[in-house]
Image (cartoon, rainbow, N blue to C red; front, side, top):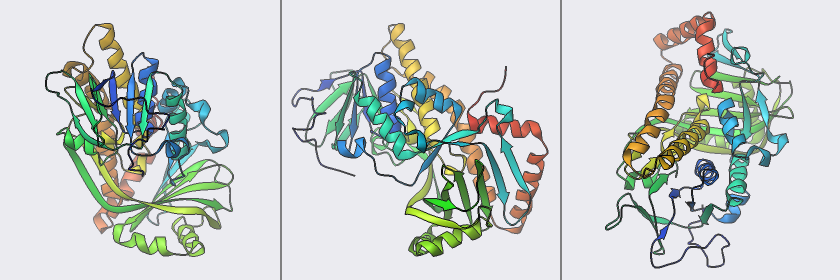
Length: 416
């Protein structure tokens, strides 16, 4: 990450020093959630400034980071409505037609397909760096969006002396004010902390290792979530007989796996996958991330809103992370539009609480449910193993329950 301040020759630099600059919304964080929000706000007639540590070159051409995102139908609809879908490379987009959940060594598994959602796929996989690139292209094409890249935010606050405005101050002394400040700078958000908003944080004591792998047998568009004893393995179906492999292991064991040569690592994944896809080959690099779940105490405060991982940082097992980011973009933009039509100040708490209430109703049950599932299916004690098997048997033989879970996975609402 580039920590340099904005160079005078940077084409994104149109801010002045001295007096604070005024916009409608200041967005701290130029990740895919922050940039998508900037696009949505611009389309709704608002002016937004985005502050991001990374350089403009890194934003325009993000390096692959190993993460492939399973987008729900609702999230895809939002991405399309913003005109961002057209900026994705079609060969990078892969459907998930079904998903199987495996438990330990048991031959039984829980199967999900898209029939109850009315679609031919549960969701769609897109590399994270593709989403970032598309969001940046969309944001830079909108006159209502200003992106200040390569900058350090030194201070954020939601009250300014003598002015009813939120403020962002950069390390070079420049100040920016607006009626609303949005924090979108990761689950480990410094902006959230400076604003005095706490978060429930769960450190799972695990490391996630992600990579792309080639395999011998066709995957038929089926994702596999394997809850093994001692760790989990997800195989997400990509194009060209490839999968995105997601291994979750104890943090103290991650270094050992990362140190394996490519052939030995591929053999390990083959074994964990019980040779379902035949011989496997590692493609490219392995990437490792600490596994920490985060749920902010509040998504809104006077002149402040949180979106993306800053609001909800999910365990990757249900692949809802960026989906929640896009849902937050949609809901917040709608609430701000309604407030403006009513002649209200968009930064007032009453306006922002409507966003918080709706977004919390959507995210909290899935966040808590995901953590409960992860807690059960990573508990390798004998009683937990028995309960794990019982849960899968019951769920497999209760079609209404499977339909409810499928709707949550796809983002498709219950039929009227």
